[in-house]
Amino acid sequence: MPVAPETYVSNMGGKYIGTPTALAFYGFTMPLTETIGGRGIEGLYRRKVVSTTSVTERIGGADRYETSVLTAKRVQPGTATIVYIASGENFADALSASAIAAQRGAPLMLAMSTSVPKVVADAVSDLRATAGTATRVEGVNRYVGSAKVAGAFFPATPPSDTVYFATGATYPDALAGGVLAGQKKAPILLVSKSCMMAEVAAEVRRLNPAKIVLLGGPSSLDATLGDLPVCP
Image 1 (cartoon, rainbow, N blue to C red):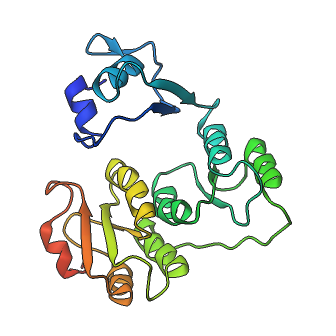
Image 2: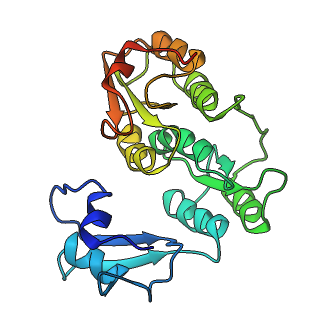
């Protein structure tokens, strides 16, 4: 069921700085004819988030895979030296990769576990200036996977002195924080509410950040995570 307008907006952060000149919609899964509190989604966001003079634009494909392609083409309209591919069947891998993709200004597209949709394969072919090799970064689960991504792409002396923690149980906090982490050139590591995998703790110690930022409230992440407690 759709949530009330106040809740829907507060889930996006509840605080806005300045007034954007454009508002883009990235492939809502519910039809825009469906209303929230008596108003359509686009009308809700325009009224609650931006002024009525702002331009509203939709970036949406037939499915999540085509939407990822259309978004990637906005990030990198020409050729790209690197393209990130993550699973479109769950959220965790794409969220872990979002910060490094944003930092490098590189496109991030979605694929299935055993195949790449034609629309994605065609886009990768169009974006690549030359044929390249594929490098896999993986872990035994989403938590270890996030540590592996950080280890592969963030050096021991990262350009940022911050590491971001987000719950690996749901996607909204990490999704919202991915842009911030990319801007700050910092990794996002996925953790449980009160503990983390040993690999995640080891990666934090390797990075040795001056600051750890918890993305989400106390119901999502305990303040004690700053002590790097390892899950039993």
